[in-house]
Image 1: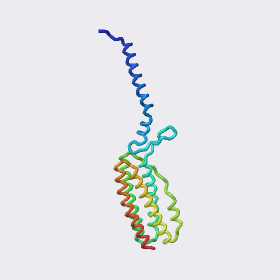
Image 2 (image 1 turned 180 degrees about the horizontal axis):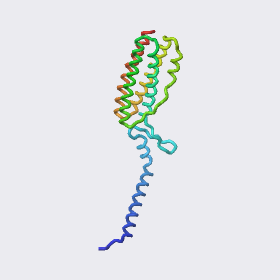
Image 3 (image 1 turned 90 degrees about the horizontal axis):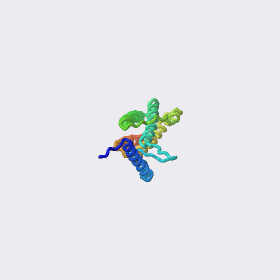
Length: 197
């Protein structure tokens, strides 16, 4: 039997590793189109190809951030509404909306913490400022009901889009359950509006 020298063995492994590396690199360049299609959608998160880079885009986080902004806005104006002298039914609506939005927030926080998603804090819109300017309680009540109706419709749209775009079953269930709750609140607002007009 012939003994191999350490120098030959080293050259053999060096050549073997370089051939393996060249094979991997050539496959990566020839399959670039397949690689792009695989990278465009992974785990419900979209990677967009812009300026020769893949940008990570988490649709769930974006839609829940928009929803969160509207939730904070709704809670703020409902709290201000409770301070005014308006009919009992409207005050009950404001209280129910605050409780409902808080429960929805707890559910969203549970799911997002399990999924390791951080929802950014977004500034509250100026709907509160518009409502603060009103001294007449009837005008305030009408603006409040109109604003609440618009916010609820917008939240329903965000959650509908979430349920259509996400592939995560937890987010789909969250969206469907929350849409049902928001539709109930929206119907209650519509009833109050029709009774008052």
